[in-house]
Image: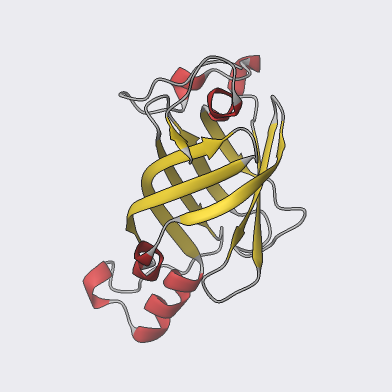
Length: 164
């Protein structure tokens, strides 16, 4: 069973905070993709990744994107949110999506394995809907003015991340 929400210093508590992509292993969203993953203390998460070279919509109106513009935007970005749980014993992570820019993901929970979790790195593997493995590699980054891990500067109000 995958527990919801963190307790003390367990695996779940160590996930808390915001992280950005580190894509030496996976380049699904181009070179130097933009993105963020946030895990909060109440068992909620948010993920958003995008290619840095996403094309602009010529009409400036999302509802009137051409089929080519829409195809490129869908292929070059992903965002979803929901709840998460982890199992310390087998390092399992389970994401229950509530909404996604790729609605096919909503059919079932996204289950995977945490392969690395340190103060500065999180890496986990998931099974892709089309088959095969997806490796998500994330890192914490120092913010401007030498402020490392200043979560209040990057986490929206309502989240309660804790320092590792």
